Amino acid sequence: MNPITIFLTLISAVIGGSLWASDNRVAGIAMLVLAVQIFTSLKMANAWQKFVILRAGRLHAVKGPGLFFIMPIIDSITAVIDERIQTTAFGAQSALTRDTVPVDVDAVMFWHVHDAQQAALNITNYREAIDRVAQTSLRDMIGTSMLAALLSERLAADDHLCSEIGRKTADWGISVNSVEMRDVTIPAALQDAMSRQAQAEREKQARVILASAEAEIAGKFVEAAMSYVNNPTALHLRAMNIVYEATKERGTTILLPSSMVDSLNTAVPLALAGQAAQIRPTPKTTP
Image (cartoon, rainbow, N blue to C red; front, side, top):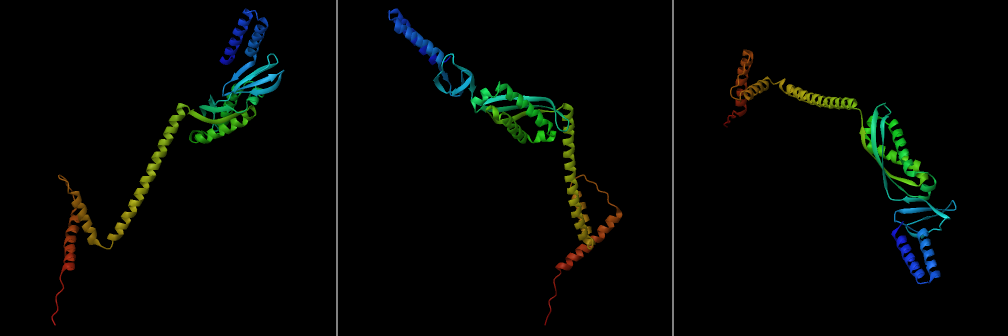
């Protein structure tokens, strides 16, 4: 009962009682009848409500929002429909995926009634029905999906569920705004196996990258070897440079074979002779 109806009923009853007490019984009876009429006939619907009214068992009108009158006894309010956006949480326990993996899925659905007449007349309990439809649609979707797709393609699964549930509930005057899967739980043993698989994939990728780097380095070594193949002096100088770089740190002891020492001794005079030949001045010629 809305406060406006109660207020008008009380005012009419008080006026009727006052008229009756003042010996104006006809007017008093009329006001009391009016109070009863207001109490039974005046209804109010909020901005988000729709009243489905039957007259003698047949659909008469869908009223709201605001104030409206009904005829007592003949008219009856069969349903009060809330058209605001509703949320329904649903899930599936131990549902098998296409690759026979049991999963637990929790989801939430956002929906609203866009046709109060259909929601009241085409289905007995639309709230319970949409919950059942959501659960069966979720199980059907899980049964036709692979576990990897279910875990990695959440948005596609949400869109599929939204369209499927919306298609089934359209005749009930219900529109599904969105469906979101909140959690997908898999068995603990399978989680460990998937973790090991992911670790193995990462190790495989790291080894592939390392092998590629080694192949590139080997190519550079081949290019360097081709540069030294026809220049033994440059090769000896490179060996001397390596020895020098290795002896930079204090306390380092290097053991060299005597053959390598002899080759280095012969390389140094040749290198110095080559440098001297490059910088020797050319003699001037006299006319």
